[in-house]
Amino acid sequence: MTYLTPVFGSLPLEQITRAKAEEYKNLRKEQHCQYGRPPQDSTVNRELATLRHLLTLARDEGLIGTVPVIKLYDEKRFSRERFLTEEEHKALLAAVKRPVQRVLICLYETAMRPAEPLTLTWSKVDWKAGVIRLAAEDVKEADKRVIPISPALGEVLEELQAEQRKITSISGAVFTRKGRPIRNYRTAFEEAREKTGLKDVTPHDYRHTAITRWLVAGIPQEVVMKVSGHKDLSVHYRYVNLREEHVTALFSAAPLSNSCQMGLTAERAVG
Image 1 (cartoon, rainbow, N blue to C red):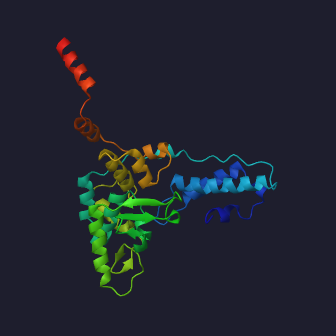
Image 2 (tube, helix red, strand yellow):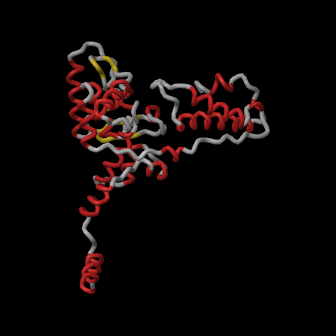
C-alpha cells in the first residue's frame, strides 16, 4: 500500500483502469528501492495483485461495475539459474568481516530469503528441538516454517550467543554487530562481489543454492518444499538449479535396478 496509495488513493474507483495500472508499472521501474535498484517484477506484481483484490471487493460491494484487466509481469522470464559452489561461497565469506560472514552462512544453510536473518530473534530459535521456528508473520508466504539448525549454523548461533552475553544491552536480535542488530549488509556484499569477481551473484541466489543442495543430498522434495516455504511446484522448480556435475554424481551414486543391469548386460552380449 505504501506505493499504491500516492498513485491511486485520490482517484475515483472507476478511473482506475488498465492504462493507469500500466502507468504505475512504468513509474515503479523509475523508482529505486532501499538497495538503490528498481523493484523486482515480483514486488510490483504483489502490489498490483493487492490493487486487483481491492477492486474486486469494490465490485462485490456494488461500488464499480467491472474490475479492469491488470496484466502482471511474467516472472518466469527472469527466473535465475545461479548456484553457488562451495568454493564460491568460501570466497565470499573470506571477503567480508565476521558479522556479515555469519549472515551468509545462515543463508547458505537455511534457504532463508535475504532479509529474513536480519529479523530473526532468539525467541525463534528452539535449541532443544534443533530448529528455527518462523511464524506466519515473519515470512513472505504467511505460513509458519520450521528450519533445521545444521552443524555449521549451530556453531554460528553459539558464537553469537557467547558474544552477546558480554554485552549488557541487546535487542533480542540474533545477528548483531557489536551488540547492535544488523540492518543491512548490501554494501559489504557488493564489495565482496567486486573483490571475488563474482559480480553475477545476488543474496537471493543463496536460497536457490540451499534448496538445490538439499535435493542433491537426497532430502525428499516434499520436505525441502516444507522447509523453504514453497507450496507450488512450478515455483519450487525455478529454485532447483541442478548443474551437470550434480546430475552425473546422482546417477553414479544410485545403483541400477537388477532389471536395468540385466538389460545392459544382455545388450553388451549382443553387441
